[in-house]
Length: 93
Image (cartoon, rainbow, N blue to C red; front, side, top):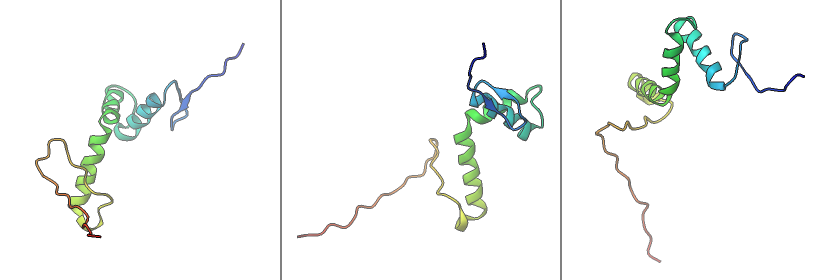
């Protein structure tokens, strides 16, 4: 008897059991040109380190053109820069 299952389709039309597996396959093809050899494990590293990779690209974009940076650069956990905060002015009533 047929069973209903949930599956994820990658960009090449292959079904995967998880969204992560489909994404890794797509990354392997897009970044490394294939899903053979070491490409899937490297694609998994890219997916696992996505937040750091996005931060690095944001820093790169801001360095190239600070006036049109798409978003503020999130601070790195290893950053030594400090940020200052200002309180709103108080009113006496």
